[in-house]
Length: 499
Image 1 (spheres, rainbow, N blue to C red):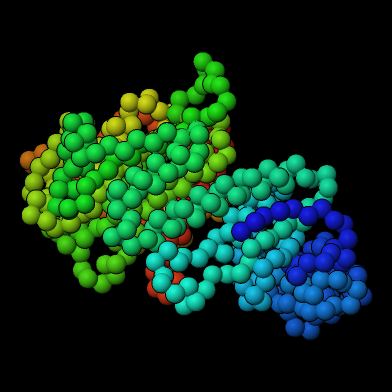
Image 2 (image 1 turned 90 degrees about the horizontal axis):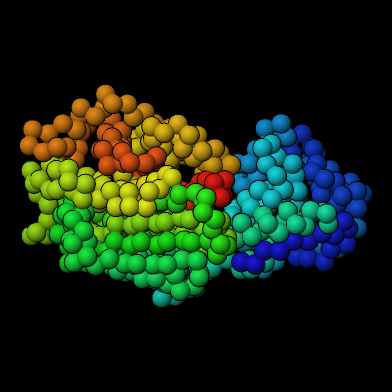
């Protein structure tokens, strides 16, 4: 979808298929709505009194209003003005797109980003305009033989309305929003692809394609032999049950601007890339097992974030690491009771082969040490326990580094991609005690998300570290099944703040 800005002050004279304006409850009009209301001799205000209560996520399309050239005015409900926040803005922009889909429109103008919202700037509001609209317009058709069975939205161009003296801020918001939106779309597509297509090799090729398309990126995909030579035995033990070869992916963004000697240390993102998780020998129940193709959404979020970083040519060195394989119950698969030696040298007793994400991540986290990073953030669909604790609203955030925790929480609020800081005190570590190895890979039924994070923390002593458990937020189930693209918005916002 193409995004542009429009600076006209004469909205009522604009010849466009539709103009979307925000209205608050109790009949309060936004500035744009007021302009059209005055041009139409109070027609909008009359409608608000008669039939539209302006609740959030609602809209009403008015046609052929007197004094207005556009054929359609889409009233978008914003709720109470005193409660209007960035979450409402994102929902409202998505509502505009849905109204356009319903009307089979190819083009429209939204004025919602012009409305003041606490803790935002025009640039950030336009970033939300682009990202929310792009997400609402997302359509998966990669494996459909007949597109008519699931027709793509017709909306191809969406503009936003700003004042002439705000053009520079608007253009920056568009630039950031488009980069973010396309990164989210890549993350969603990778998640939605079937596991027989989106294999570890496919993820590696995706990283290589990104490096071809963006000059700031360099990709390296390590083969089984190279991974073995490094000593990543914990990672390879998970891959052993599958015929699909594993891949360890390194995607390195170096800013095009010359770096000074005082350039900050890189930020490293580590993604869990289990392209299908059967549970291994500790096999999962059959119900919803198809959704285990989404167990690589951590890897997808790293690739989506790195795409956005490269598109923005972010003035900060960022490195993406992905450990990718399948977890299958083959003849060489991990068995409960097996002990493996990780890249760090620590031995791990495998009590449950379905706790495999931490086994691939621990070696990737050790590998990250070589970059002497300023911070390392791992992203993983790690535990069902996190879904029980937080549902699909908040991503679980685990870290003992206060500064990094606050930066990520703030980025989540600013991007409307929320995270919640979970406890991770030393008292939980005792649940990982093993009689036969340095550490067990599970800590029992209680506090499962916490003990999984505690396991990972054993491999992160050399740097500031945070773990994002996205098991509840990476995809939707049910009739609306599909990848969400989270936490790409949070990560991009965090990296923008650090650049």
